[in-house]
Length: 220
Image (tube, rainbow, N blue to C red; front, side, top):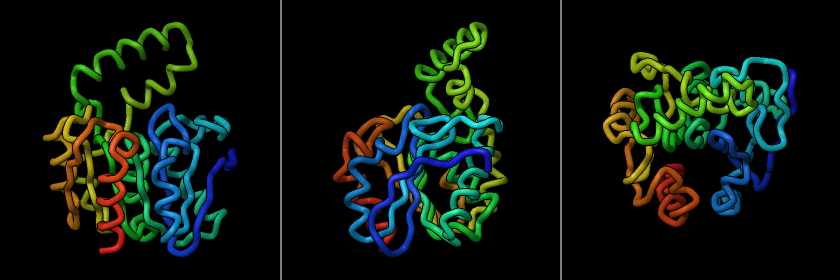
């Protein structure tokens, strides 16, 4: 692998890997790491080109990030792990679970989307305008914005490859369309669906309810 991930590691026991969203880093899960580490061996990663992980030379795509996760798990000798992904991190986790189903024990997808059409128009239009401007100006932000315009493009038929017990979770006022979130959940065979009061950032804004939901799911 052409990069070495920066990651926060805490706790012991069954592993759980936390994957942040676009333009963020592992600090996003400040309200989850301590809670989860009481019961699990937590790994909170900075994705390629995010936070303290270098950009490297490989493609800047959700699928590359999923392969980066495979490399990380091999380096850490993790044969199987629970995955908790938020936003683009959820999309990474979703692609990973499709490609490597045997390596995922339980899967939590928070604020995931199959494609750009899953994002509410009021949010997506400014992203696409910003992407066009940044791309034309050769701005470094173009790669980040490109993830939200061009990725992940997962078909509903691909979701049948996910074998792990899954929790799809979103905010009641999420930037992801509710119908789209329900569509994801309905195409994963062993899946629970939960909406928590709040916007896209429920892990930060409503951590008590968010943590309760994921702990109940993991311990069930």
